[in-house]
Amino acid sequence: MSNPTRVLVLNSGSSSVKYQLLDMRDGARLAVGLVERIGEETSRLVHTPLTGGGAERRERTAPIADHEAALKAVAEELSADGLGLDSPELAAIGHRVVHGGLKFSAPTVITDEVLAEIERLIPVAPLHNPANVTGIRTARALRPDLPQVAVFDTAFHTTMPEHAARYAIDVETADAHRIRRYGFHGTSHAYVSRRVAGLLGKDPAEVNVIVLHLGNGASASAVRGGRCVDTSMGLTPLEGLVMGTRSGDIDPAVVFHLKRVGGMSTDEIDVLLNKKSGLVGLCGDNDMREIRRRIDEGDERARLAFDIYIHRLKKYIGAYYAVLGRVDAVAFTAGVGENAAPVREAAVAGLEELGLAVDAGLNAARSGEPRLISPEYARVAVAVVPTDEELEIARQTYSLVTSPAH
Image 1 (cartoon, one colour):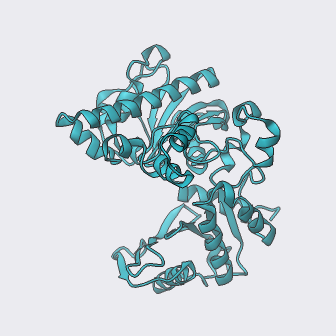
Image 2 (cartoon, helix red, strand yellow; image 1 turned 60 degrees about the vertical axis):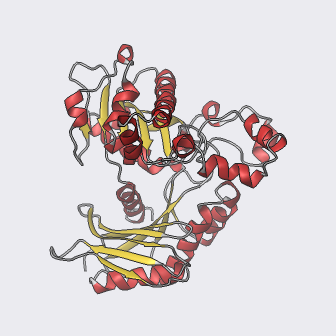
């Protein structure tokens, strides 16, 4: 029998599991799906097989008690298409893990020791790592004989120099509590920076890129020669750009003020900054399409929210331009970055002296392909690159389990 070539990618959230099955001979997707509202009466599984041409999306709504039940349901759906977890074609399962700390700078085969370390990092990723651990435990129980690989959101950013990663607080306190900038969305930043180099016809080692991952969560990175040298998210995904519901950069004393003067608890402040701030806090909407519609109707709150969002974005473009010294490209990705032409236009407007410009026609054209939207004369390329974190996770997983050293 030929060597197995399929990889199942699992992204386990607190009440959801997203999954994709890919064939690594060509990166083709064989099936995609989502289990959501795990633990509720209204649990839902949506499964879409992508083989056989006429296959259609299947949906079932029934209580799914926990992640174990969710993965078993996923396995049943895959089996119905001849793509089951027991298939000899399955080479590995790749798990998205949000926080790998400093210990994990590359994809890692999951052992008991690796799993214990991921658990030890829960205090710095309380929203994400517990769900990632649950997904890993469940998948290992279902296929204990199969290589399982953790691909970390933080790994790409472990190349940051200490002067970029450290906060200016007491070193002993910082070290005792693992306080430093870790960064997130690293799988996306790695994929997009590499694809940009390809667009320019260059090796990633020759290219300096500013990557702007703009979704409901948003982050920027400065990538020099394929290695991250700075990123906007920090100890947690709260720092940096204005996001859908997160504040991004804020004076730390705001927290003390809200506690002392506002009488708010630590938990209330946490909810405020993570879930009731950003665009939704500024104007009540975190959907950029709705914000743009309101702006077109003359809504001043929506206009101010957009202006604040763009102002922060420009500051990071300028800051990372200074960090890199030479910039070959600025790349927009994720939901807003890929689809919101007004955001791309506004983000580079006025930066012509830095060599940045967008062509109005190219920027307005919709496409699912990586593309340049800057005019030919622009000194710095501006690109739109649809991110593909699942493909990146699958590639890293497959590369690791098929390497001679494994």
